[in-house]
Amino acid sequence: MVFSRLFLLALLCFSFSIQSIGQPSTKSDTIYLTITVDSAYQMIQANYNNPEFMILDVRTPSEYSPSHIENAYNYNYFSSTFSSDLDTLDKNKKYLIYCSSGSRSYQSFLIMQDLSFRELYNMQGGLNSWTSSGYPTTDEIPTEINYISDKNVKIYPNPFVEYFTIDGLKSSPTEITISDISGKKILTRKTDEYPCTIKTAHMDNGVYVISIKTSSTSIYKKLIKK
Image (cartoon, rainbow, N blue to C red; front, top):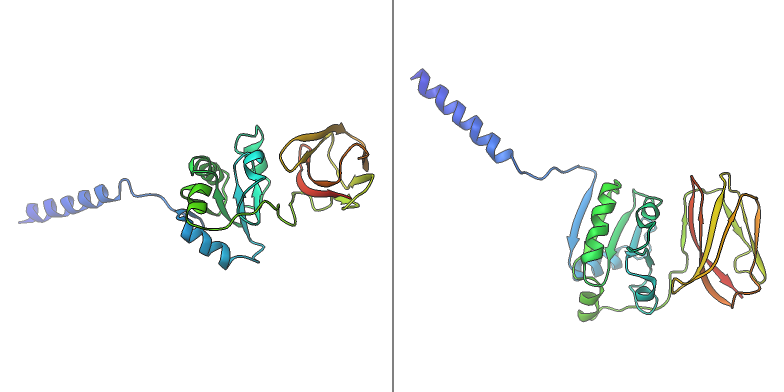
């Protein structure tokens, strides 16, 4: 009788251990989900003016420029600095990630998990599914591209006419890159002098994105030349 009870207890313990194997490990403070375009649309509408919500388009600039989801920011998956660029973002915000069909966004989704982002949503089917479902796109870039890991850095004036100045950097050397909205590089410069003034007489009027990188700072900001 005692043997039977011991055997039954051992069997129950073994059964419990088998059921526990293979269960996905989860953290109570993280959310990682792949969602449909319908759910993504509802999420965007619910977070339209939420500064803690951000849409990432991980296609190339040439794909992004003519058509993307409103207020989506472009981070090129094929860029050599893609992971380090993502790592400068606020990891406590909520992110919706998409590409053309879902492959690049899923890989980005995994990279951002490894970088310890808290809340991530991968849009299944990408922009192809989004447009085939009748949801709108735009060719306008967001009003503010403003990813600044050092709040002391200032770029002024903006909009600018003939030049602008970068001030507040504490690390050196600095690599500065200016690109148009298609991703074409217009200017690349390295400097260790602060403040740094960039002359722009050779640049056409329009919208640009500046990238500023040091050993401790990554900045991406929209610039407008008038």
